[in-house]
Amino acid sequence: MIERLLKSVLAAHQAWTESRAQTVNLGHPGDPGLATLFGSDGDTAAGVSVNAGNAMQVVAVQACVRLTSGTMGSMSMGVYRRKAGSRDRELDTSHPLYAILHDQPNDSEDSMTLWEGTQAHEELRGNAFSHITRNGAGDVLSLRRLNPDRMKIIRRGGIKSYSYLEQGVSNPRAFRADEIYRLMGLSLDGIACLSRIAQARESLGLAMQLPRYGGSVFANGGRPSAIITPAPGSTKEFDKPTRDRLQEQWKEAYANSDPDSWQKTVFLQRDRLVVIPLGLTLRKIPVVVHQRSRVMR
Image 1 (cartoon, rainbow, N blue to C red):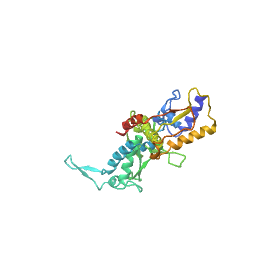
Image 2: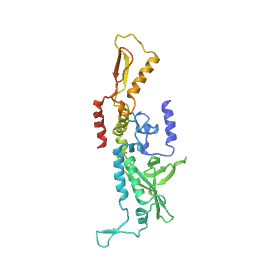
Image 3: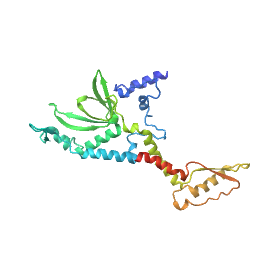
Image 4: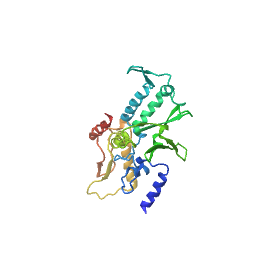
């Protein structure tokens, strides 16, 4: 029953693609195709989902992507020709492709923006795609970037093609291989490329969670959360008004980001109470900083 249900879902999902990168093994619950299909492919042990979008919140990722993509975008792209009788080369500014590669690849991007974005796509997603527009004579008219998340690579009978789903459009558009420029990252099969973000998602998930945890620790005056309970041997039970008063006293003293209140002492107006601290103490916070530095280096 479950297998038939999965097959029907996959049939709808694969109606517009036969990409090897999306082949799903129904007999394996941990198959990455199933994880991608149901949206759990970015989950990490740290409890946060990591993808190419939110990975840029990690300072190290943003710095690396901006450096490599900015360097690629600032390089002067052009067309070269070999000098007659020599191994030297020179720019061929008269070539029809020169203006597209060097100046204005399309009506919405200049050359630097296109190549910078192309490199960023490859860094974050493992692939970068651009649509090559030609006239009736086959001359290239423009080069326009496409979103790698909306592109599927199809191979049928040894012939490669592409299927692209435009935003806001229900039916995908098919492209021949010669209509797409593809910048590939590392690939193990020549079709599907490995995303750096996916490969490092556990480390990145930890790096994304640590600032949130550290922020909550210091917003609480660097003090851990705690349990307030009657001392051993006490038969007294807390009613709701008593619990509310104790919680308010504790919160007033500690649970705020005002540094002037961090060293205050709270006086609990009840006898025979025991405070049991929970969570990391300040002594253990350097361990958190060390773990974060593994990704920040």
